[in-house]
Image (cartoon, one colour):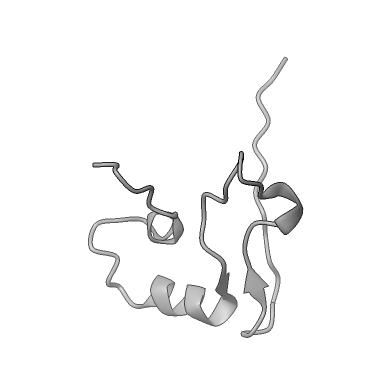
Length: 68
């Protein structure tokens, strides 16, 4: 059996489109791992060059409390 990788791709979404985990998959037992944000906010972070050594994905990840 081969591994499979899925990649979400968005083609010319409007700037006010909200991107985030679908609510049907987020439960108290399985919380969201990434923030919900608009396409505009994503582009601002991506273009800002202020990633400070992190990937854009790292900045969108929800940080767990008590993790170091």
